[in-house]
Image (cartoon, rainbow, N blue to C red; front, side, top):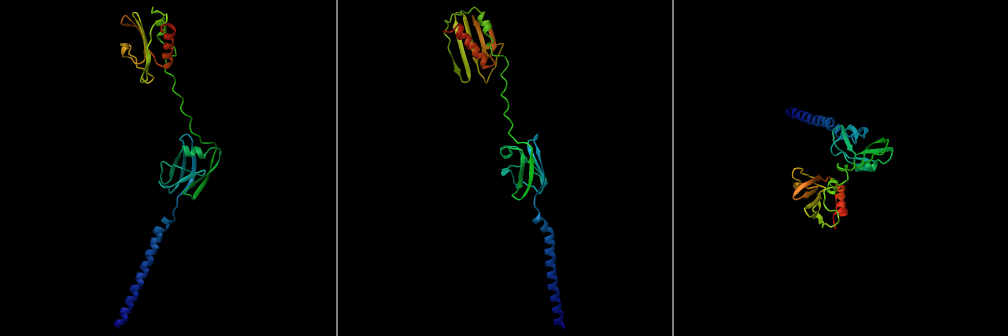
Length: 233
């Protein structure tokens, strides 16, 4: 009788182990099965031209999610599990060159057709900055002309360039005409013109009788032309 009871206990214990394994497998399938089967999906695509981006909404996105548009890989930004951006850039400009429907493919599997109503092109370069104010006439030539300095083309006029600063001057009797211009530094000191970087002046007996700022290369060239035409050898 004792042997029979032990046999039943062994059989019961084996059955319990089998049931426990089956329950564990079932629970594992419930917990892990959906995760293994889960994949990212694209739900909608919107071209935001003002924001310079393509907005992709869906599910399951992460930083490793990859996209191609029109056959070429495109970068992503601002990635969340349900939304990300494809910023405008060289890749988009190359892919979207016509009004057409383009295939957006995610990770080589899920894809949607996106109709884009016009090419996506790079913005034009910004316009060049306007020339500095002041016009193109030498601001000193009127005063130079009426100063009394001999206008007989008999003045020796050295000229040259130090770094970016152009310079030229002429000395005649008690008169000195001098000018300089640096396109990167148009500083002018009206109180002490000798401290200036871009200027035109007339010095009479050691005192500044004319002093004006030179604010662009056109003004400097006009001052230079006046000197060659009127006083310089």
